[in-house]
Amino acid sequence: MTEGEKYRQTRREAVGTGWALAVLIVFWCLAGFGLAGVEVRFLRLPLWIWAAVGGSWLLALGLVKYLTARVFREMELGEEAGHDDR
Image (cartoon, rainbow, N blue to C red):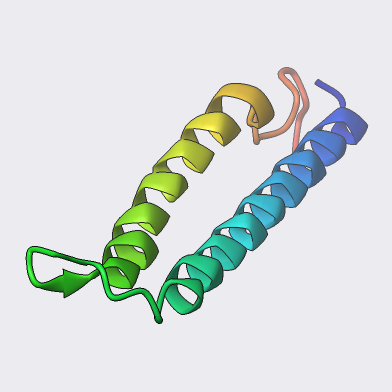
């Protein structure tokens, strides 16, 4: 893999991670603040706690699974083989 390809892949991974973080933050806000007025309780905890905390955790697991399967690629981080670095 050339240096340019490594740079493009690293940038792709960074952008993908940024989008995943943005999705997670939006979900957390919508689940937490959006459900704050709902009076539904489960195990004596309001629904917004389950949605914001548990839902965000599950969404994060799904996003990591997606990123590792579709965005991230295995690549050598060191110099190319045969390159003498003196």
